[in-house]
Amino acid sequence: MARKAVPIRRVVTGHDDKGRAVFRSKDVIQPETIPSGDADFATLWSTAQVPVDLNDETDGRDRDAGLTLNGGSVIRVTDMLPGGESPMHRTNSIDYGIILAGTVELELDDGVVETCRAGDVIVQRGTIHLWRNPSKTETCRIIFVLIEARGPYLHDGQPLAELKP
Image (cartoon, rainbow, N blue to C red):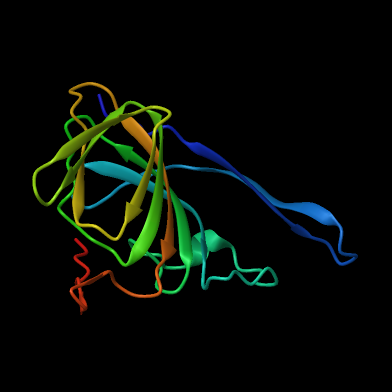
């Protein structure tokens, strides 16, 4: 039997022609399996820049966000599938990860692993890392908010290169 990702309800506010708050959209988004097959992603919103232009009426899902959006921000739901593992990667962004359900292992390039569970919050500051779901049966749902950094991390004055899978 095929596995079906749990959909996400999204509610977006905005303003009407009199400047009053209104609901711009209310929809349900179905996460889609990424090419590596280890996770399902659903981008909920993105911005073209930081600070954000509140007058930009573009639906944030309509931007090509990629892993991170250069100069902007992205909020994404990631379902790490049972046994799934991302490649080792680094982005020039600050990433906030909020574990909603399940367990995920965060491994750094020196092999050190931290196990994170529902309710944990991870602040990823441009370091090289991978994500692994150690469960054989349970999906781990994580909300990620990624905000582009001013530039890469400098080690001894030299920038550490991005490594995007």
